[in-house]
Length: 222
Image 1 (cartoon, rainbow, N blue to C red):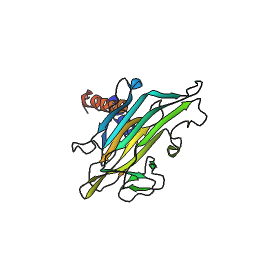
Image 2 (image 1 turned 30 degrees about the horizontal axis):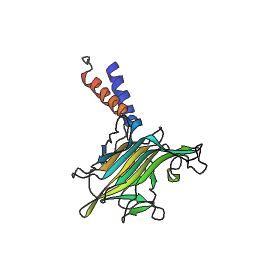
Image 3 (image 1 turned 45 degrees about the horizontal axis):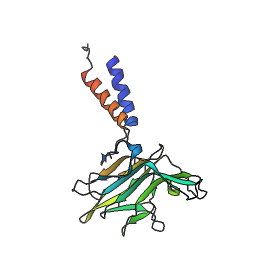
Image 4 (image 1 turned 90 degrees about the vertical axis):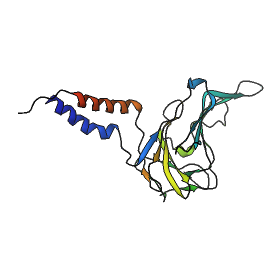
């Protein structure tokens, strides 16, 4: 009876703990260590495994501070910058070249419901937090993030005459922006639905639950 109860609980909880992207694969981005001492350390990501970096994440864990010659005022910044290869096109606003922020449940696909594919060039995205005593310092992240703690940035990757769609799941809730994962569609020219990439601890918990079920003793029926 106890084994059946565990099975029922895991069946109910697994969809909540581990959202399933039906046609997507998650690529995790490594962070340089120690992160708090990095100054522009680049980490390249080969999204479609063709031997070239499609996205480069540059980490600025140590604040870069600029002070006035007279002293007494300073401006510091830290965060990450995302740069893109020539085959990757961002889903963005054509007038400002800012990315369109996607929320869970929205779709990245051939016909965007908002924004447009920036085909001519894709500017780097700077998720930089500025602070200091300078009066004109911009506090917080760019306005297009809308004060969100978690956002998705859509993109499409050109492959010959087709495209592969995906998004970057970015967390802004900690002292440094964190790329939780890059989700890429398994099929060409097929869109996918945005869901938040689960934390590694949640994935481990779900796998552990499966192992418990596999090796749990069974009572004879009858």
